[in-house]
Image 1: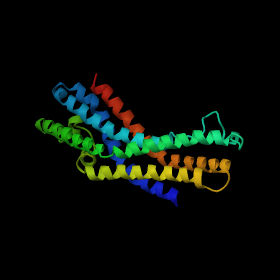
Image 2 (image 1 turned 90 degrees about the vertical axis):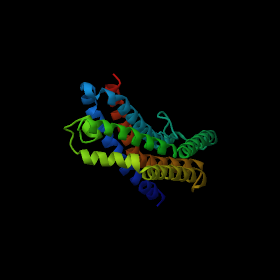
Image 3 (image 1 turned 135 degrees about the horizontal axis):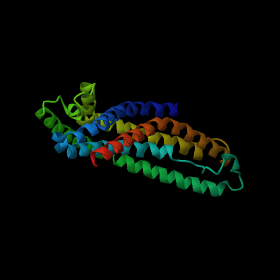
Length: 240
């Protein structure tokens, strides 16, 4: 049941972050258009700042999911079958250190959640400035500035509005992400320290739980990584 709770908690952030991905793709697609048109050059600095705020939101997502996806009890050269009762105490010390470190990373990430609201407000500020520029050129909105031929303008603007204006919703998504990280670490700790069986058996169980929870977080991690890639490529064009 606990594993189900983690998966359920992650559904909301995973769905919500798709809006940031759509916006990032649209900006990357329109970046060359903005750079190529002399009349749009004044918009480039503001567009860069908007993209940087979206990057901060995506990085927070990757940082949170990486706490679980990059956590490993065993290095690539060590199979779980190599762990025996004769050296379990030494290995348990190492694993305990890892648990403490992942716990510290999780708590630090949770403490920084409210900073995402600042990024949301900045998105609003830069989007509004860009919209003013777009209207002055008789284009429809921010995405009209990116490309007069861009399809789905209203849908993309709606997604940007959700990111920028409903900061409560974005914060709630990140809080659910934090709850999922905390729940996953709690499950791993329980299996490692309070589960049934001897130390070796508990370690194997904990490793299995970790693998399952890492699978739950993988989509979130991949989404965030894709957004960062789109943003990096857009900035490569805009900052040339």
